[in-house]
Image 1 (tube, rainbow, N blue to C red):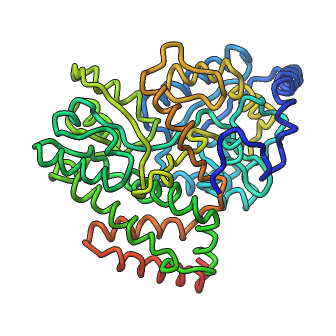
Image 2: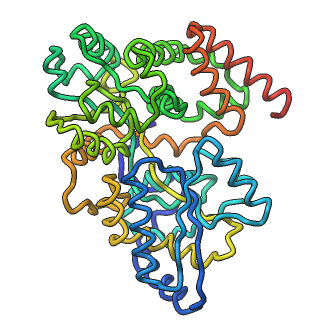
Length: 437
């Protein structure tokens, strides 16, 4: 069942500890501060591609070092495509980074392998959203430090929608979205910005409808499919999910050869310049959108709404999580200093630094940018009214997840029917179970 934000942590039993969090952070920080004055360099391995977030990480590192001059934070970028393998190799070579930019839901295998440190709930201030914390927890333990709350949905250019005769209210259902995109296309404009040369941008087309649609009805969806307790055909909703996803990308985004080769950064720029009327992306894209808009001198007004999966507005949610979060490596050679940085990132000071630089919504309630972008208020309202923190549920891992998204994308490229994609999914999962892959 969907639960509104702010409800008690019944799933992990940590609400009492939250009340003590704020004072505990300060006390523990002072204890660590006085233990050692040796020069230490922490490595923060991340995969953030947006310029605002890169600036935010550097700003956090600089502010932390200003407070603790003997501790430096070295920020290192690594492509998301090979991030987990590279991390495992570093751990195996006894060279683990101290901090990694991932969430438990995405990499449960590294947690199950004992590579990530469980975080004491007492370090969390009571201003952190309860469901946000639940979404970075597994098996009753917290493993992540959230920097912001986020999710994804449809950005839209209000001026272009008006020109095409589209009402904003049409975007509340999936049929309305598809109809609006067709109207835009018929008006001679590019309907949907494309960044689908990168697989993750198409992953969210599939996952948005699955995690904030089908999973709301069946929280153990992934667990059931991975274990073989249920098959993909037990969920007829997948046919509509695949059909809608294929239409969005094939018919309304990849409308020319150039678009097929565009990266996520191109997608942000295409929408920001006013060269596409809509874009399916996350709240994390805001800084890059504004950079492109300003550079192009585009004065159009933008809006944002959730990504609907059905025509029943009561069943449509915004897929949300502790969007930018990081975890502490169990193999860190500087555990005290790594935890001190983690605790610093949970303070209002750090929340303000991150929001100002990244344009994202801080995970800490009541903290906002000094001059917040108008879209941030819209993000907050949509999250307050429609958020579903899907990562609190069991997810897919390893080869199961890789095949889930790979088969879906390959099906769109090769022109497979939704039924053929479902069949390929089922065959793949059965093969993985049989071989133990």
